[in-house]
Image (cartoon, rainbow, N blue to C red; front, side, top):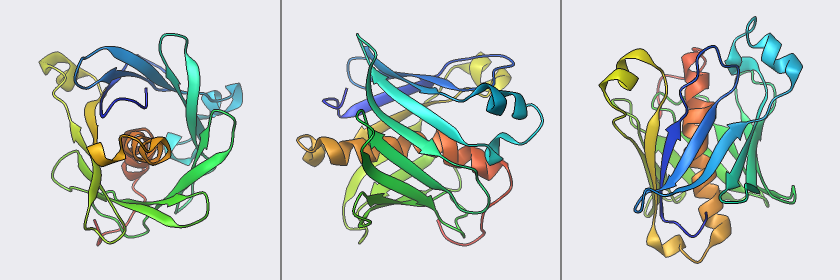
Length: 206
């Protein structure tokens, strides 16, 4: 999976579902190369009917085809005002983590490596589902995320999303860096966008 440079992510349409599942395709060939699926316990599934999903912990497993081997996980504990989202490889070793910005109107957040060094700054666009993954100094764009049109019926009658993740070619031979970019992009929709729906966030920075 990490050999690809572009990833088309499509949320599976489910009604009355308590967890999200996404199909991941190579953005160039449109071949299915993996899945991203929430793995949550029975108690959390029940509580999601009673308590806002945004407050619940979640764990997302990213697996690659054809054998569904685990590539990495993205997980978040209980959410109050600021998230810490951890990224771990298939062996469970911490690769990096994401933290939301307290005052982020556009939906931005920060990416750190396992040694607590800032790896990237993810900046959102208030007027559309567009995000840029930048180096901390803002001089280099490592990746970007943009919304894909899912068809009239899907857009009007479901909340399922489709979006494209593009990773800069300079990261082609850097699997850890690409994992962090891909994890950050997936977290935009699966974790951070959900938090914004809960009404917790700031009003200034993007």
